[in-house]
Length: 266
Image (cartoon, rainbow, N blue to C red; front, top):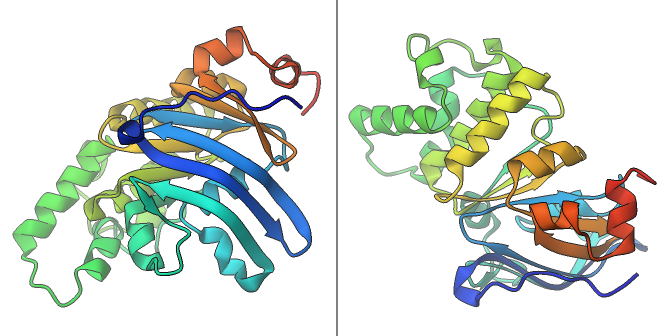
């Protein structure tokens, strides 16, 4: 496998900077000296066959992998806006406030729509006096940003679990926004959605682009082409190629990339 070819943004342009990251689950090595630069305000897709390490890399950015305890070991550095998130003194609660996560299946809390959106904000501002007017403003702003306000504004006190899957996934994104994350990680966020809902969520990504940096794992190469500006291809725990999306799909530099996007394996 050839050395990875990746764009190198200026440091001030990088929201995420992954440098020589390796990760082990017990004795199994899942990542091999991975490098990746993600531009601030961009949408970057991670693609590759199942088991290639893309979700592991994604979950390393906010250290969710470490919920498995000492079974997981990581080396190298991952900087989010200049701060190494793998440093020993990092507070994980603060890190996950700055780096939000959206999972494959929507996971709304068994609460009202209102309480779902404000849940993390209330935790992070516990002990502070926040007025109902302030909360209402945060609530409406977040729901408008995810294009959900008009659908739910008349039933904010109703159960979030009663929403459609598409609306639930939008709600899960809205739940991140009041705490003002810098980065949003998405692990196959449309895998449980039908084509119409998938299209709606992809449109939402473009609405959020610029204000947020989005790193998205997808098995759907058509989605990567539609919904990202840059794409990184991984194989067997290694970063093979990272380029602007249209260039990677039209003129890949590496044979492994060409073989994958042409459906020869994976």
